[in-house]
Image 1 (tube, protein in one colour):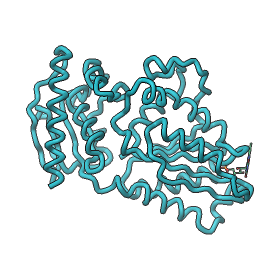
Image 2: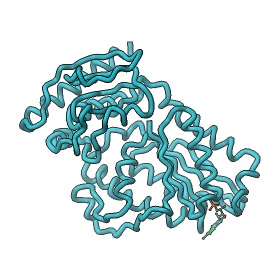
Image 3: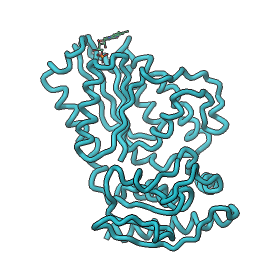
Image 4: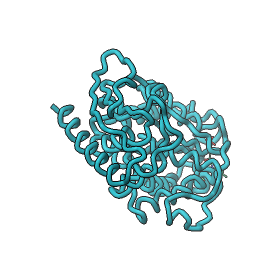
Length: 323
Ligand SMILES: Cc1cc2nc3c(=O)[nH]c(=O)nc-3n(C[C@H](O)[C@H](O)[C@H](O)COP(=O)(O)O)c2cc1C
């Protein structure tokens, strides 16, 4: 389960950073995998409004945002944090927000969505020096639409007034405890789901499709992961096309090894696509083999049949897990 932190203050050790790291530490304590980005240290340029992303959903600006896109699509929980600068978020965070226009276009113009849309959640943390009643309104509105672009449900926000100098947040009577509490609340529906590892040879077609259907259709009861014992360089383009026909965007995915997939914890169940010999030995994990032929190198029609069979098998698996 990936929690993505976006630290939007130019102060690396200021109030926002402290608030966010408190949230992230609590999330990690609850068993999540965390990636915390200090945006000011990254090369993320403003959106040029060139509309290139309308064509294929990809932004043509070659900078660090290219690493952020797959993280935004993989994340189960996105935690954005920013001080109030002139009643809005910082320019540092706003550049990243504006670049999510590529995700907005994918969903609303190209009608393609990543499988995590639907389960993904978003949280916003903020601080400001003054005490005005409407201090966080501008930020909240921006973040609401940022979360919408990436397909995250906005599940909570915290804003603390009269926080100006580094260290002020530590002196606040409740802020850090509130951040921990929000971490627990926002992760609550995601914790305790059955961890299912979908496994094949290259993690380029079959196990990726199984992961996607489990994520999309059963994300509320399954925490799916996928891997291959010999991961390919990239996911299979025919698989991307077959899934694209169903409106599912797989183009941002990268094959992962078994070690990478298991780094955040052991699965409860391993579903082999037809490569039982590749299964890792995980004590206590049940193993099932679906015996599916590898569609790599076969025509699109074969890939689509494999896709449909996998979707059906995932649905059956969900039924058995429900009972
Ligand atoms: C350029 C700039 C603009 C700011 N604008 C506001 C503002 O509109 N309202 C406010 O209450 N505080 C404003 N502040 C104060 C910061 O929100 C405050 O110092 C905050 O604690 C900084 O958080 P940090 O330590 O995480 O960087 C501004 C600060 C700067 C540097």
